Image 1 (tube, rainbow, N blue to C red):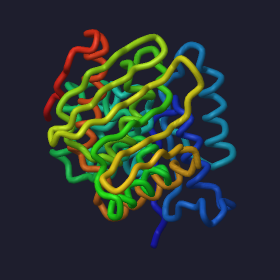
Image 2 (image 1 turned 30 degrees about the vertical axis):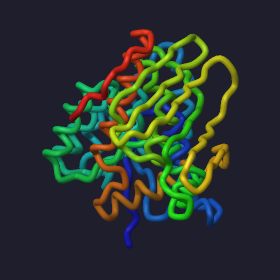
Image 3 (image 1 turned 180 degrees about the vertical axis):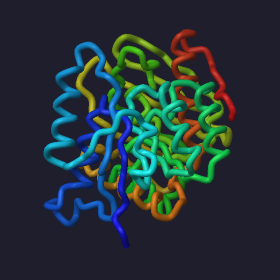
Image 4 (image 1 turned 45 degrees about the vertical axis):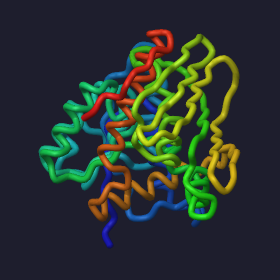
Length: 303
């Protein structure tokens, strides 16, 4: 089986190095290897003020240590790579950056967030559905070992009737509140409890967002996006046959997600349905709207 050539779009995230190190390092331990693909080309936008040194360091490591070739614009990856990792931090750029690859049926992974708004998500979903290229977007926390292990227990203890999903909730200028880091806890919730959210109520303070999530089938959950103190990721679920309280801290989620991504590039079948990805965007937008409205109920937008 020939090795897939991958192109990266976006150097403004640490993921560009983290993913390349995993994929391109021949000395990775066997249990940390992701076989069948390597990063061969990359593009990065001009660095924003204050980020010049960081972007230059990432560019240098990619080219000098990992043999990645830089290109002058995203579309220049076409013909040089088999699949693309779209990693740009700002989800509002994803529609335009994805367009040349979708037009040429090139398989695409879009890093979180899929987009920065429901309106942008609708536009990108339309492009994806008009293309035959397989596309997947998600947070790596969806693939955390502890998350998938918890899900596997439901065959024994039953499906969850409720849960709490917690993680850091830091903000980043230019990106809507929950879309930068709150998305990780939201994706853990969806991975464990499934899609089907109807509405939310969010209490927003400087130190955290506490979101009550109501599912259409009557179940409920709580999301906590914490800023007021150091916080890791954890989850708890209540099931008919027992409860689980699980810290998520093993740190293997990049490896596990990359295996899913390369698998999609090979098979053409995304592990996360596009409708589920749209729901994550709608959920985050509803959380931010409810927080701004002092906890008013906000229903999720539909595709």
